[in-house]
Image (cartoon, rainbow, N blue to C red):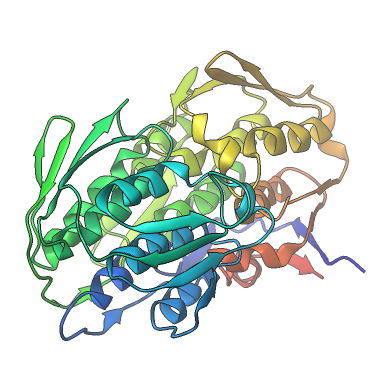
Length: 410
């Protein structure tokens, strides 16, 4: 019997209360990898409670010859590079979907550096067999940055451990560039500098030194609360622990949500959301923040606002084909997600759609579940199938909704 969760919302309170969102998965996974390269390693505070981070933490220390990352894309890319360039013989595999997600660019780069690494099944895709790395062939490689910034981040974090260091020449720009900049800032925090000259990133041989580090709450996860606030009647919502200046690129959420009537004020305790006048945008570019696209697609549809999205090229190779998933689920409320060339348009539903309930498929994708849940603010009931998918990044999401006044039934 499949699991599903029923969500409704009748809270008329003007204050949604205070929400404590877990630490950033992106910061946590990078900090854990760098910490593993520190001698001695230290203790990272406020690590994410996400399943991906727990997996990263345990697999970094694993002595097993077969490493199963399950559905964790970041873990696959980071650990492939970590085990390769620290000369550890491993087989790395994952779920059926993980074995459909390309990794060829990273494998090509590692081979160019000198790693003996092979595909165990389909060329260009996991599972992989990492055999040995004894001699560095080159200290300069070119790599396409338009597919995933995680390839670049993985290579840069291991670059200082190489005897010759490493220079990355990034072709076609770096997608999700804020995540790459996050990596570089974390490397600097732990004592390693990256020299940047246009599309060239250079790291000399050097050693990481552990320095105290506290992971900030996750900005991607905050997007669902911004959406809830925008769709509810509340006048105030507090998000604990957030800082005005953040390593996370999805901090851009603050500016992106202003046109939707959400004002953010920072204090020593975090971020407070209040109301401001709406001036809904006609176009949003997600090239630097693709993980926010689902949130805004649902929000625009719920507000019956048509909007053009660009910069979504990487969404088709995420946990699911997110383009197709967004389209399928928006159609259930009479909306649509239309693709034309390199842009997608949220087509708003007709005005009579709010009287019914909707059942949302998640496609094994945590962000589908969390992005569509805010529809409960404008619909009698939202049913989310496979609600456990949120454990990938935000395990306490459903209990946090309940604490904010949502009715949750499993």
